[in-house]
Image 1: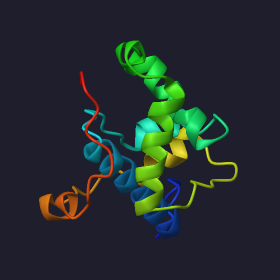
Image 2: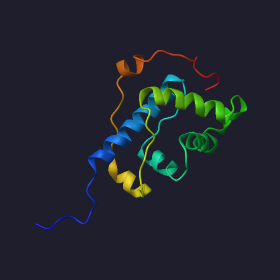
Image 3: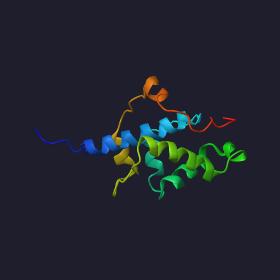
Length: 129
């Protein structure tokens, strides 16, 4: 049999993307934000340098109404603080394009309710969300 021309998935990349997504989604949940990132979202932000800048760009593009009550810097820092408590590493993908990231993780594992409840709230949930 010949090898498939479709690029094989990289298990290390899969694990890294999954860890990043779980950390971001847990941070959003902890802060009471109704955001949910998937591989496509992460891939669309991958071209922006810096985690804080990626979060700010996402908020400005998809949740601009929040900027009436909170600054983009405040929101991004609050999210990053929570995300880094769970998974401090930044996503480092050298030369990976959005299609490669989309193939890397076709499905996303759900975070269990007990896992979400295991976090102590350090900040109150953001109002007006």
